[in-house]
Image (cartoon, rainbow, N blue to C red; front, side):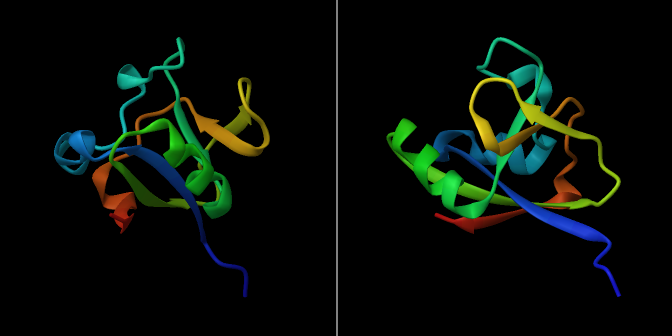
Length: 95
């Protein structure tokens, strides 16, 4: 039986964790110049950690039918959501 969810990862700075775990991953908080949430596989998320002084990785378990799009900035191993991702789909994976 095929899993009904898919797990991707979001890397960010620890200072943002309290608001993310309260409000979810919000497209309006994007630093990419577009209202998107960047997601990636686990290995790519670790690479993105280099962009933060105090990184944290958030696991994002989304329904398989969640609309995801290729990341216009980074490439093949990442994708974006153009919708806010509610807290119920998030868990802190790596502090």
